Each structure stands twice: as structure tokens, then as C-alpha cells.
Image (cartoon, rainbow, N blue to C red; front, top):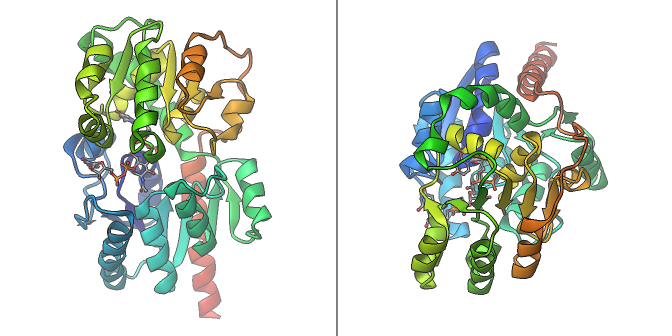
Length: 363
Ligand code: UD1
Ligand code: UDP
């Protein structure tokens, strides 16, 4: 079996790390980095820390408008697929790199498989929501992290090739949680005490590219009852600069560069709470039982909200302020995202699929 995995953005490196290892145990992987994220701290650090093999192809696409970026990726991925002739194209999540891979796979008539299929925010203004819907509909194999994701696919008529696998980020957290407790010095490095700070990240287009929303978030975080550590996505730094808010943000928050995964997980595990608009961070907070305030109106990870660990507050300053002071620690944590063996399941299903296709051809 030869699998062409396409990654390009920070969360995809983290997801691919655990799956790649399982894939390489049973077959061959051609790893393609689109270059959507390219700064050292948004890309290389994850390959180094998580032992992800060097990409076989780095397409160097970098930042651009959505249309041009996706188009460049499509143009660059197609010849890689023609050259390497994979049995499967494996895609992760909901970025432009995901959509580009889905389009090439379906045009080149290669089996397309999607990890994190069936996630829906039901907000079509999010570029990621369009990427998810289109990718699922172009996929032959949909790997759903939860039963709800399976149901969402069914409600759109996608019932064939759907597998409930659990969530690969849960695999990843279980693997690194103990390792970082001893191995990360980030608390000392940043002068933090466990339980005495709030960890915040913001990068969603809706929050960064609207001045009023970014300022409202900054207002609320500035009033937080504990110091706020803010590993800043480059997009957010750019916008703070553009709106003339950077100096104020640096004075009121502990702004740091984006962190490597191990240090970031250590902070997630030891923060008093999280304030974020990230998809992955909401889920990791839930796995680590750290209360999360999500600065969005809706989420595709609804199970975390139903379980009481996550609260949706949008970009409204008063709602964020109130949530950051609220008392909320549920007694129980359900396990809607599997058992930590999603990656193994995905590799097994892919292998069975390729073997079956080959034996059918032989007949
Ligand atoms: C992308 C994904 C989003 C995901 C996020 C993970 C899409 C539509 N969005 O958003 O779903 O949650 O990645 O972090 O695919 N930049 C740099 N250096 C980098 C990367 C980006 O400076 O290494 C800056 C550029 O100014 C760029 C901006 O960040 O224009 C946005 O980057 P882009 O990859 O387009 O979107 P993200 O906001 O990172
Ligand atoms: N992350 C990290 N360092 C940081 C911020 C986030 O390693 O400074 C990790 C985080 O643990 C999670 C992933 O990056 O696994 C989430 O990426 P991001 O928030 O950029 O994207 P999203 O999940 O919203 O698509």
C-alpha cells in the first residue's frame, strides 16, 4: 500500500505524526507538505519534536488569498500524485491544504480518505466549514472522530465508506501527556505557576480580521482574573499591528511566539483555564480536563460543550469576562472521541481497503 499524506498547517503536522507512524508500519507513505505554514515555529518545530519524517515533497506554496493559495496547491499536488501513483490520498482536517488534496484526488481518480470527517459548525461563513463539506463529499473513505460526526455525514447522504475511528488528537495527547509533565520546562521558562494563569490563543478569521472583534477579545483578556499567556499566531500579530493594538496587547498580556507542541500541551494541562478560538485547542483542553472558554458562536466539537467543559461565548467582551470568572468543573468526563487507538484503526482500514481493491482487480 502506498499512501500520499497531504499536510500543510500546524494542526495537520500534529495529527499526521501519530498516523504516519502506524502507516509506515504497514505500508509506504509519501509525505507532502504544501507549505501553507512555513515559519520555523509554525512548521519545523513539530517535525523535530514529534519525529515526523522529512516530507518527500515540500510544495512551498506559502500565504496568499484563499483562491490563489488553494489553486497553487492543486497545481503543485497534481504532478506529485501523477509521479508517485499512490493507492490513497490521505487528508486531515479542514484547511485549504485539505481541500486542495481532495480536489486533486478526485480529479486523478485516486481513493481519497479524510481524517476528521463529519465535523460541522453549520456556519458557512467559516472558510473551514466549506473545506470540510467539500472534502467529505469528495472522499471515498471518511474517518469520523465521534458518533455525532457519523450522523452528520449520514444527514448529508454520506453513508458508504464511513468509519467511526475515534479522534487522532486523542491518541496524540495520551502519548505526550506524561512525557511533557517531566520533559517540559516551559512553566519555569515563562515564570508561571501551575493553576495560576490562563492560556489563550486566537487566530480565527472572524476574530482577527474584524477590528471590533479582536479589540473586544483584547478588552476581555486584559481584565482576566489571572495573567494571560498568549502564544500568538503570526496572523494575529499582523492584525494587532495593523489595528495599532500591538503595544497595548504586549503590555496587558504575556505575548509569546507560537510554542512547540510539547510546551503547549504542558501549558494546556496546567492552566487554570483556556480561552481560545482554535478547534484543536478546545478538544485538547477537554482531554486534559482544563475548562475552556471558546471565543466563537458555534463549534464543531459540540460534545465538549455538552459535557460542561467548554463554553461558547463569541467575541463579546462581557460574555468572555464572565466566563473567565465562572466556576465550572464537571464531575465526569465522557469519552466521545474514542479510545486513543484511532491512528491504528485508520492504518488498518486503509490497508484492508487497498488489499480488497487489489484482490477485486485480480479477479
Ligand atoms: C489555517 C487554516 C485554519 C487552521 C489554521 C491552523 C485555512 C483556510 N485556514 O489558518 O483552518 O485553523 O491554519 O493554525 O486553511 N502566516 C505566517 N507564517 C506562517 C503561516 C501563516 O506569517 O508560517 C501568516 C500569513 O500572514 C498568512 C496568515 O498567517 O497570511 C494566515 O495563514 P493561513 O495559513 O492562510 O491561515 P491560518 O489563519 O493559519
Ligand atoms: N499548538 C501548538 N503551539 C501553539 C498553539 C497551538 O503546538 O502555540 C497546537 C495545539 O496543541 C493544537 C494545534 O496546535 O494541537 C492547534 O492548532 P491551531 O489552533 O493553529 O489550529 P486549529 O486546531 O484551530 O485548526
